Length: 162
Image (cartoon, rainbow, N blue to C red; front, side, top):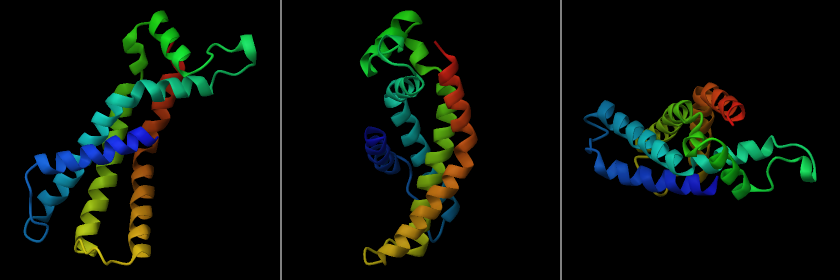
């Protein structure tokens, strides 16, 4: 979770600077779209980097049993065995639906939050922290609800591979 979040925020800021800048007061639609696009792109690139680790974590979580009954002994054993049994690309099984889901989630998350922050707080550093927290939680819940079906399909695809 930590590396994904670090990549998300780093890439979001990078892409926000790469895309054209629009004034929230005169061209809000384009401003909002850039916020969505920078978040979506950041999420997709981050997922591309960390997906094999997430895939292995999901497989390890389903590896029930004790001792020799287990299929994997740890994270690297899981990655190595899946790579040898199938091929490298199977570590990306379910990536298509995952990247779609993360584009929806991160696009919604960053797009809504950055736009709400600009509108409600006028980017004021002295805004009440409780209000910022409430907006962030609302955006997180909304983005999660929008993207939940993609995550469910993604986990099923991970479990069915290899």
